[in-house]
Amino acid sequence: MQQALVRMLLVDEDISQHSQFAQLIEQITLQNHQLNWCSSFAEAPASIGAGVYDIIFLDSTLDHLLSRRILSAALTQGCTTPVVMLCDPARPETRDKALAAGAEDYLYKGSIDAEVLERVIRYALRYSTKKQDSDGPQLYFDPLTGLPNRQLFFDRLNHAISRVERDQHSLALFCFDVDGFKKVNDSFGHEAGDHLIELIAERLRDCVRRTDTVSRIAGDEFAILIEEVDNTTDVINVAQKLTELMAPPFPLNGHNVSIGCSIGIAVYPEAGEEVDSLLKHADLAKQKAKTTQGSAYLFYNEQMNVEAMRQLYQEADLRRGLRRHEFELYYQPRIALASNRIIGVEALIRWRHPVRGMVMPNDFIPMAEDMGLIIPLGYWVVRQALADIKIMDEMGMPPIEMAINLSFKQLQDDKFLEKITEAIYSAGVDPSRLEFELTETTIMTNAEETHRCMRSLNAIGPTFSLDDFGTGYSSFAHIQRLPINALKVDRSFIQNVATDGDDASIVKAMINLAHSLNMKVVAEGAENIEQMNFLRTHKCDQVQGYYFSPPVAFEDLAHMIGNDDRVAM
Ligand code: C2E
Ligand code: CA
Ligand code: CA
Image 1 (cartoon, rainbow, N blue to C red):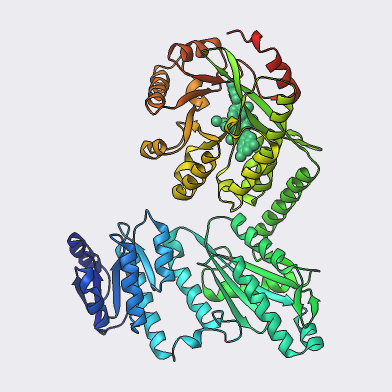
Image 2: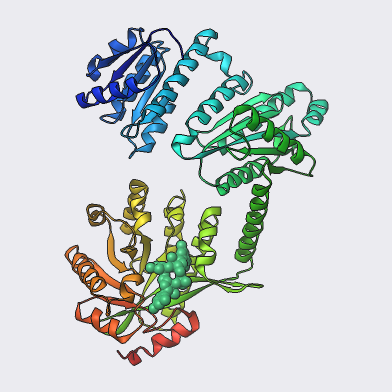
């Protein structure tokens, strides 16, 4: 670490933070340092602009908008001092925004320790020295595509590696090479070749998230840095998307030019823990990918190739299943305890697999979610359920309600509202007969987006229920504000309701809670008369479970509803 005096500024309106921060700084091995403190955002621009600091820590937990404004103003005024944003760990999106606004790095407030702090300071100081040595930002970008160049890419990769451990995510490095680029150059000329590179760059940029980096590192070679990787599936999905995006031909000089690509992937730390080893290994994997026909990607790590193959196979299997109509909906009746009548059903998907036989949803839904196939599969479920309602209506059966399970991923699809609305209207079914089941986790994650979606859908008729209630964590403040009609108490509580005093108290409390929130209670998985009696005594509204009926095929359901009077309990 430098021997020279390191001057630091902490901008934080929370007075209690200053001494804590100073204590942390004392613990690190910076020999000569001075920490100044600015306790007013109003004075921050002047302090930052003074240009006397080597590093600035800017709090963004009190007002992240204001902090970013201060940061942007400083950068516009030519501030070259690295700014490290102190972010709120409960709002990770503010971190992305801070980085996008030009913060050099970030720290999550509340989880800063001396080691992390030291690493951040070292990196920021190194980076700022490099910046001063260069001739300005244009040195960092490729003039043809405007993408970060090799130099900036290595910097970012270095940076990403330095924070990957503390973020508890991983990262992946992709080396991307255009197949047959020379042929394009030879037959169409260099200008067309350049244009093709621009078009490819555009598609690559579209393929990654804003926080990832696409860079042109040589003629027809690109490098892509994917951050915040949680598992191999994340990486396989990006690789898959990259090859798919390159498939449509490129318009070039009035011709449609098709190209292939070869991709080598190195994942931290399996394929290396440093820039050099990661690059070398991604490149090696790319060379190997080049030897196969057509577009291909290969991991440096053999085990990940096996995983990729397995996933490709499963994905193809699921897609084929969809194409060949191998899925079926089973229906499980819901009984109103007051009338002993079937008032609705829950649609539960089954996969009649040509080799594996009947496959249950727990064995394929998680996979379909990971691969994004839950989206087409989910639309199929909605359309099929609507079609079955129509048939029941045409058969003159009493108009029961239809509950449909939704995965978290389905709500993230941009087209969700539009498609569901379209499906409902084209089926001509009364939309208020539909109820969508969401789990607590779905409702509590990505709250704002999910809630907006729920309200819009509710506005056209369908209601919602909270599935597997009791197994997750819910904020009642949230639940109360949402169009939720019913709580579905998870089977695990119902199982022992007649034998375990604790579970009995919990279920009683849940019923009271639901009623005080003006919601109905549905008990899941009632299997015997004791459980039924308990639920009836404690004014549970509805039950669904093997005691009355397991999920059944549509034909059997129609029969059951026709003989509704036989419901004896
Ligand atoms: P879930 O939504 O909690 O559905 C209830 C599950 O409990 C069903 O399992 C049902 O067969 C089972 N069950 C009902 N009553 C009883 C009972 O008395 N005893 C016992 N032991 N089990 C009972 P299934 O059909 O295997 O579905 C499993 C999960 O798969 C569902 O749990 C749901 O999360 C998911 N799923 C099913 N269909 C779909 C779908 O169309 N879309 C989505 N996204 N998920 C679905
Ligand atoms: Ca359900
Ligand atoms: Ca459930």
